[in-house]
Amino acid sequence: MDVKTELRTAPLARREPVVHRQPVPVPGRYLRTAVDSVLEQLSSDPDVQVLHRCDDTLRGALAWTAAVGDTCRVAAAVHAVRDARLRLDAEDPDQARLALLTARDGLRLTMPSPRASAR
Image (cartoon, rainbow, N blue to C red; front, side):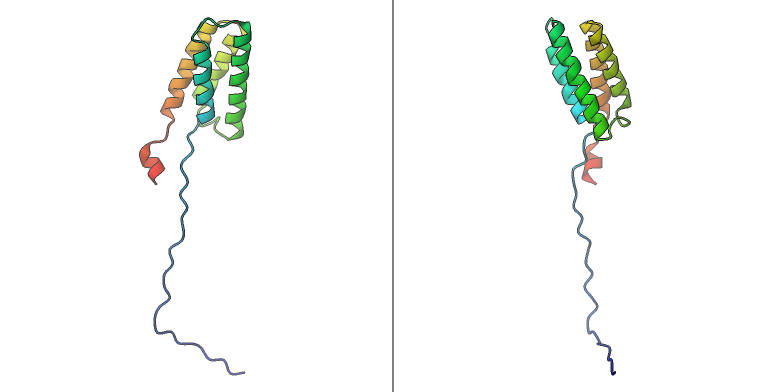
């Protein structure tokens, strides 16, 4: 068997790997949406049914946050939301509102910087 090697006159073209850049997900995005929604509902004088609905909204947001793996990334806000749920259960909307404002401030700090999303 006569095997000949092929001589190439030009080097192989260098191929750059194709990089697909996806936007950086915002940690706690669902929790932030729920907190804003509940704060809006608590702005007026809520009745017991509204407090229960707010608690359901926050519980769902906490579950969603855990499902996407953000609980450890926004831990302070998660604790504040849990505190707000306890306050809603005790029918104390003023203290729940304060806890949710704390949670919202904590979620604001975790927003990715524009430099991190440009990478």
